[in-house]
Image (cartoon, rainbow over all chains, first blue to last red; front, side, top):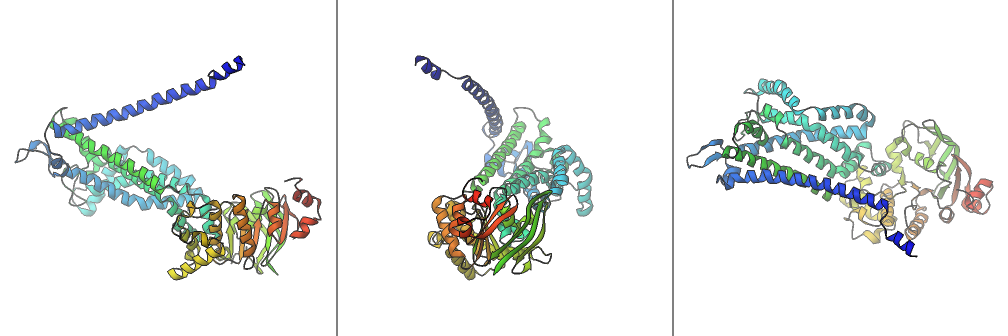
Length: 306
Length: 250
């Protein structure tokens, strides 16, 4: 009796292994969380010092339309309005997503519904290849092909939001497409069968049932593509022209948050306003990344089938 | 008079022959039950009757399946209108992730009915036909996935009825349901045979004997025996049939 009791009270070796595994996973997760939190703290504390140490008002920063760090305006306030970059970032993001969405969804429909064989054999590898191309290559191609092309059609320099949009469109196309493919694939087969069994045509089935059931997944794919477009720096910087002016059309040089960051970060001294204000731009990027993240989660939750 | 007649039908999935020389007459306004152990070809045959097997890659059919005397595998056959006439209810309740109303209205809409009043009428009639109107009439805008499995299956039956088919194929319609829901569906099926010709696959021998008029016993891709349900259950002519329905195998 005593023996059995003590045997049952003892920890088994399996239990010990499980606890060991649990501890290891916990340490790893804690490490990741720590890194993320310290990055957040670092960027935000630096970004905030523009307003606390250098006394720039948040309104002037977010809505000011003149970006000349290091100079002061007539009222003695530093000229660090980020509006041109914020608008530039939003324009290239929205336009490229707008352009990429129909192409991506059409490609995904083809790959999942119309010709899974060709999709798997030809399109899948192509998309994987496109994902793997470094952004500097996209930027280089943009610089040598897209910019002269835009120049020859619309005149001007060829640098600007339109060129950036086209480059970003190609860059996010594979991301959005492969996520859209996953979204369509996750639509249960029996929805399609039910529709076909009632005499629905293939197109009606795709349009009325599959796309409808996949809507949350497709939206997530688009938002994900937007997040990628918003955060892309190098390729955009190479083709947008980097003029920190509020964009008035699509073919004059403009700038984005990321392009100004990559352009200026090597030319400023830590601790100065010129440097701090770049951190403020980085903070906006971070907040936007967080926003996209929350948006995708929200869409996923909202659209989850009950 | 037979609604569907199947003559010397062979079916292959790639190199595998799933049905061997199947012949069967399915009489109008009766319930025909397909019974037999798993993998014996009953679902394969029922899916051939509305050409859902077309979706399976490598599926090849020889022989004739006639619906009202017309060969449904003829190249001039319009598959969509065939499927409109031969509706199907699946094993798992599979309503679309939309409201009950839109589920029922889906079929009529795909066939071109857009008039709201007409759709309302069809929805009510179909739900009444599937004996679920009283339960859901106040919740027509509720998501069809939020109701119970038994109700979902009757929604699926209503959805199939909404396109006004002549034949209703049911592939184990109650195997995912509890006994009470099953009883309701069985009762419903016996009511439906007044207007529709029903073909039903079932694993449940009692169910076949309770509801069907005619039974076909399948084994290894062949119909071993078919005929009047009462005769077959009381006095099977073949040894295999007797073994199966008395529960000695399968």
